[in-house]
Amino acid sequence: MFLVLVIVIVISLILVMVRALLGPTLYDRLLAVNSAGTKVVILIAAYGFLTGRPDFVDIALLYALINYIATIAVLKFFEYGDLGSGGYQEDDL
Amino acid sequence: MNVDAIVIENIIVMVLLTLLIVVAVGIIMLNDLLTAVILSGLYSLLSATVFVAMDAVDVALTEAAVGAGISTIILLGTLSFTKRIQKPQEHNNYVALVIVCITGGALIYGTLDLPSYGDPNSPANSNPQLAQHYLTESKKEIDIPNVVTSVLASYRGYDTLGETAVVFTAGIGVLSLLGLRRRRRKEDPLLTEKQQRKQQNEDN
Amino acid sequence: MLLVDIVSGVFIFVGCLFVFGGAVGLIRMPDFYTRLHAASVTDTGGLLFITIGLVLQAAFVFDNPAAAIKLTLTIIFLFFTAPTASHAVAKAALMANITPQCQNGKSVVDESLNSLYSDKGKDLSAVLMPVDPPEIMSNFAESKAESELNNKDKST
Image (tube, rainbow over all chains, first blue to last red; front, side, top):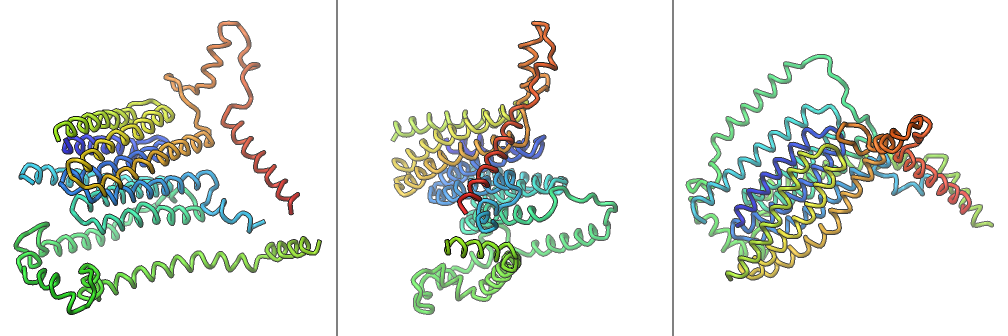
């Protein structure tokens, strides 16, 4: 059961990566990387179960948070042109 | 775990390593730097998965936090000072390629002497006294209850010292980059103007 | 134990279908917004089903309640963050003037206007809006920023 899960997720990861490498626009790549992050979270959790030690889910939890931070940072970069805009705009004026 | 599971595990690790190579080549071929940054996030996600598959959980944790999180943000911060598109290269630098190939070949030649992954005859595994010594004697010798801490900070202290020096240098580099900007802002006439305005407000 | 195995197996199988379908959709769909739809919805759903199956396994088969709790936390985090990230990607793409495409590759805005007005014999150039939705969005953002600036000036 876990073996099937891991294999399906690895195949999906390959498909998503094809889109990340081909993707005509930047947003396609970003979407693919975000989706790959979710799949990696599931893969790490499932891998712990496959090897009989489900203690690796800590890393899955950390990934879930880090992946979100990275995506939001990239999108903030798109919207404002740099990372600091929201932060120290009040100081600038 | 039976033999089939080990074979399948190896296949999964190999697939992930192949994906790593594909992503790395993709990053090299791209001219758009922002896309390269995004794909490097994907690269570190995949490499951390490989670390988990090879039982190096602590390295995977570090790779997840530093590679996928912080380094993406730092690279984006760098990009906001430069342009998004790479400058086209007029000439091909074959000397650099030869040097890189020689260095890489020497590194691969160096790995031939290392024991292979999970080898039962490697010095660390064939010497049961060593692991036993760490497990039983570290409490007496170092007086720290956690074995991992005593190995990291005492038995392997020089290695950790070198790592800490690297991290410290990187921290100084980041601080110098960020600090320069802030100091310039303090000399900014706008700020004094703002302070004046604030004082006026307080007077009113 | 058998019942738990069956139930969690069904959950994991459904989740696998979701994830694999989403990955195929990400490859096959013609334009960005349809790909976004395929990827984001199935990712959240597939993650939910797979993780429920894993929680059942961790709690009853592996007898590891700590892992079950951590997996539950993962579900909760990802259930908030994954749709937020998808929404942010869609918003950024809309701000960058990427319009949804029809099958013939034209923008969906022009195409709907064509189908509305071509059979009534009206002049299209007079009807076509000079401003398409993404520009309205960016205009809105600009005016909002301006009004914020004005407010700030008034307050100081």
